[in-house]
Amino acid sequence: MFIASAIQTLGRYILLMRRVFSKPDNWTMFGRQFVSEAQKLVIDSIGIVCLISVFIGAVCVLQIVLNMGDAILPRYIIGFTTREIMMLEFSSAVMSLILAGKVGSNISSEIGTMRITEQIDALEIMGVNSANYIILPKIAALVVFMPILIVLSISTGLLGASLVSWITGEPAPDDFIDGLQTFFDPYHIYYSIEKGWFFAFLIASIASYCGYNVHGGALEVGKASTQAVVTSSVLILMADIVLTQLLL
Image 1 (cartoon, rainbow, N blue to C red):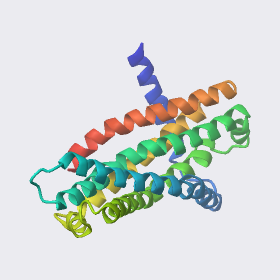
Image 2 (image 1 turned 90 degrees about the vertical axis):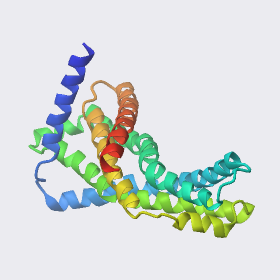
Image 3 (image 1 turned 120 degrees about the horizontal axis):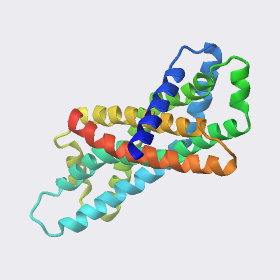
Image 4 (image 1 turned 90 degrees about the horizontal axis):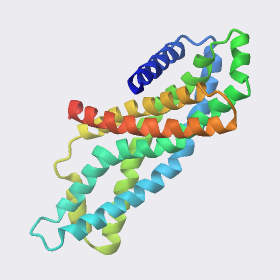
């Protein structure tokens, strides 16, 4: 039964995406919605992304210093390890999990509310492709601007780590900077952005699917939001394993 239900859900998801990725009826309206969604989903998320990244970068340095103890290792290893943690995993995968909670629940609840208040039915009656009209700008905005969030996360995370080094003196700021520059591979930034694009699509499309297929009342909207966050989080973790193997 579970397999049959999963296949049925996947089929409905694919059919919905076919409707979503069709040519917009009005490009001007699509452009306005795209800008609006970019403001709501991306710009409004910059604060929490930067705040969390600063503290994670700081905690990474403290934890690495604590666990290195008196080990006979060059101190630049602390900066090197912090950089790799932020670039390879945190700023793409872990930050996407955080955005799944913030952005995914927002998308799902908004579309779910439109469904139960019959706004989507009204669009269908007027001959508008409601899936394309409502969902495509959300997916496009999050996917297009996800690299900005990732770069900001990396930058602020390393800034937080640098502040800890400067304040505590452990490691010495010069050693920390040397670690940030040692064995730097620019591809790791592209790798993080490539994963971010895929995760952004998962977050926006799954949340939209859950909200679009809500039936009932306000209680079902809440359940759909929870389902969107849980499902997208699990799929992000699974995709992270596959993408890491493919891209690295």
